Amino acid sequence: MSAHGDRLVVVGGSIGGLIAARVLSDHFAEVTIVERGGLSDSSGPRRGVPQSVHLHGLTLGGRLALDQIYGNDSFTVAMRDVGAACLGFYKHRPVLLPEGWLRCTSSDVEVVCGSRSFMEHVIRTLTRMVPNISFRTGQAVGLRPSADSDRVTEVRVLAEGGAEEVLHAELVVDATGRGSRASKWIEELGYRAPEESIVEPFLGCATVYCRIPDDAWPGDVRAFHAGGRWECIRPDAVGEEVVATAELIDVEDVIGRRSGPTISQSGATECRSPSGELLANNVSRSFCKPPPGHRGSMTVEP
Image 1 (cartoon, one colour):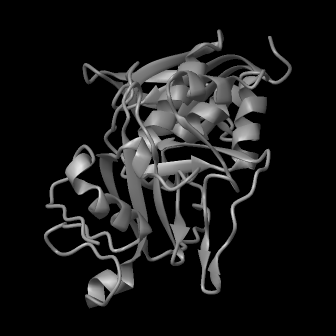
Image 2 (cartoon, one colour; image 1 turned 180 degrees about the vertical axis):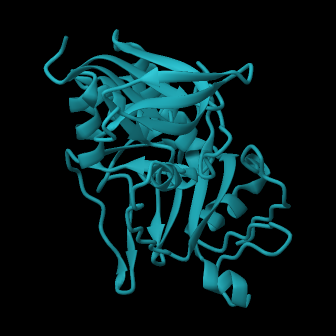
């Protein structure tokens, strides 16, 4: 038996659930991750992860935290090994402010970039290597309390065949994200659900996958941050010279059909930005395509 208990169950196998399982595996003899859709051994978009195809970047703090959690800089090493982009935060990423462009300079601050599904695949691979962590396909449908109703001790799970199973646990972690039903489960046990706070950022993302010749890049630049939005182009695929441009889009602008980068009602993406100009100026030598699952048209304009 470990210091805190025999068994922990984590409901939800996305990034939050994977990392929680790894951290708590030091305190429980057995850790089980339950994911309703199963977890593949390969990288790719997953159901219920709306931003899986979009570009993500881990700042220095996030990268170092994952290196510490998984030990021996293993996250950074694994990301590099499979071809992720590792960028100098101040050397490869010019920033445009209202006053003009900030000058790039050398530093030891490095960020790791890739799609959400790409990063999740690396974290999932590292988590699978922890000997006391196991994965189970099934949908959690409720909780069961102890005999005195003092604490939760079991998770009800629908297995792939439809039969209900009960998993005993001394601690249950809900990592199901926006689809969480934990509040409802707590109410079903006779307790008051915790109060929720919702913060609406009014932002959306648009991503285009493309390939640009090396000689089109200005100097050491590999990413842009401009106009108050992330407008980035940087490598993002295993074994391929694929880069992506992502823009944070003001949802109110989209609804009001005002100026600036927009996503139209048909789903078209317009890139009028430093990244869009780089694409448009090299369109004859570039390859562009929407990310997996994209259902609209795509235009790139200078």
